[in-house]
Length: 449
View 1 (tube, rainbow, N blue to C red):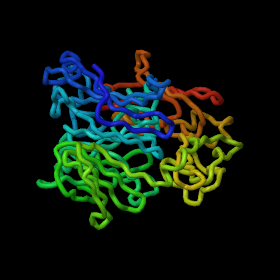
View 2: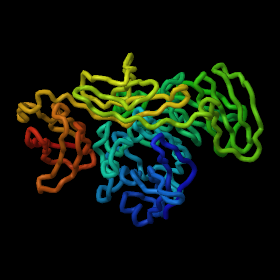
View 3: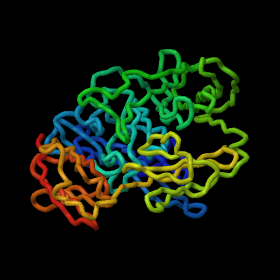
């Protein structure tokens, strides 16, 4: 019923991200809108915290089954008339098999607090928001990006969500980011088994990042239309493989089946290689400096007046909303605007760096006297389901509850001004914004499809 498989991602907090099959029966699949009438090995992602020598606690999880779409049966769950207009959801009727997605690579971006995974069978990579709670991850709102557990970005095979464009990925493994601070930092990377007819490739793409979200013209494919850069491997594998982008701009490549591990420079020249034998799935290179130094503590952020203060370290670099703040390299930083702030620290030898958790900062100097009725508005209204609560981020801490006209809650969240209710039917809904210092205000929003 549940089976960990393929890949894990160690996190700086000592936890692990893991991929896990979860079996859905044919009846469950049919109720979700599948036309195949078969049992499906769906996927979930868990963050697990080690507990003793042999145990672990699940501290966060996300299920793809909460983010499906189908356009064949309006009486079944997950129905939308258009697949291409809902790229944030996975079409349950696209290439449906028992081993449906076959996820095989997972990575974590601590600056964005996002996860990327690769799908062998659907020829795509997917980015999801890890800043959500587990409850929010099952919905379409909440988290830094405001979209709950929906896909924030996907790339490699536009046909999977009904868009026009060329499929670049052909059996993909090892989705990951180029680390922040490295050449091409922030690019997404995939090991593309069938990159060419004769050779596997290592493909990089520069995603259209916009804050914590990714730009998209609805009805079209996500950009870029093709890879940003490509390294053609020396052979082709029908099995696993990986790459690692190194701080000097070189790339380490590992090709399963052939047992070959080698390093190339930016011009593609092979610098060294070794036939490791066997069937190595992944290979990584670590510097001696990294290996000889113990990991420093993960930094923490506290607020002192209007300033943010990092725990002590050898060096500091501050970020706001996923972007480096140029010149912000002191232990203390005073924000001039609302946002999510984090700090990167290094050890004394600059071998190992750690990132703090994001700190949600709001300037609330005059919020006690705010008139909520004048401050808060819903934009756009009417809406197709996605809207913003204008003025909300000036409130500091607040909660949001959306209910239908019968009084049933359809969304609950905190400190988010972006709401996605695309899964709901058209009609009127009540949006309640609650604060501890300025009271409560209720707005009505009309959802029209």
